[in-house]
Image (tube, rainbow, N blue to C red; front, side, top):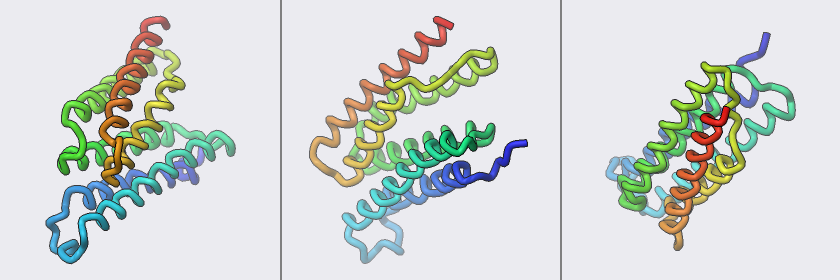
Length: 180
């Protein structure tokens, strides 16, 4: 019997908890709690939360594979945590008018569609391993979100590069699904 509450799954749960906290710092800037704060400090805290969550994403997968602690629960929690973090980041940035609604729509539509496709593939007994393009897409999305949170130069260009990689990796998933 697999131990469901292992370190990788705890890290995924931690990432799930960080997503709404990050969103709060991005969108609830009128909160009286933040009345005396300069808006840049809210960016710093949101950025710090995002970096911590992104690092846990790397470590939960690394630990699960290295320590042979991959579980069914982890197979659900990890992608859920990833999607919640990206959703919180992109929606928060869109509300702040730092991210294009079209870019966010394209990225999130692809994420929802491919998640559904993966569920169908698993139910049919097909392999749905992530591709290298999917991994690169995730890294570029994370970098773009970080740049957008910090309002750094080239953030918008990175966002559109993330859109292109997101759509391409989605194409790969669809292609591979129909090949199998």
